[in-house]
Image 1: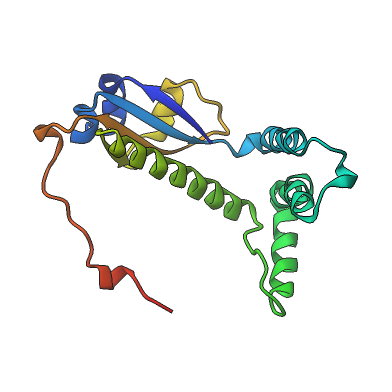
Image 2 (image 1 turned 45 degrees about the vertical axis):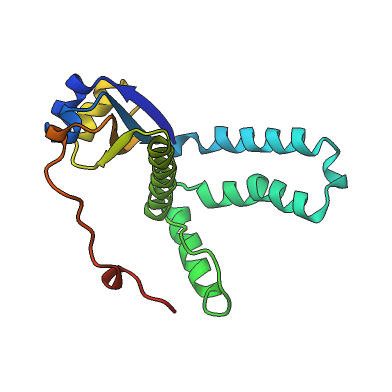
Length: 190
């Protein structure tokens, strides 16, 4: 995942001139980069080696688990060849899942969804932090992702998750009072 900043006037057009985009002081673009998983994996492994600061054979069980997550599970989960390995993993996990709980998001399309969810969670954290500092934000999905990628000179493999307008709220940027779906329609306890 990555974040790019762009100027509101130029990018508002690519956000279909939504009020939140046209009146924003800044725009933030949340970018998903699944193609960088190997680089990110190595970065995490190096971080863990420096954090634990001892030979791998001396890791305790918690440290071994963290190291093996990035050393074995991430490559197994993210590696795919023309989508075929993903389907093999999916069928294998489905069969194992008949007998015990198991991670089932193994296909290319599943991993794409996982990456977008992770990016959206990071965006949510950013928006909450902005609110804590007294700024307003508005996430937008109604956007021309191809034009935004071209404007930011992003590689083909990257995907735009959302654009977030940032700044101090202006009356002309708001089209109405906030509306929420009733809580009992979106929540179910089990």
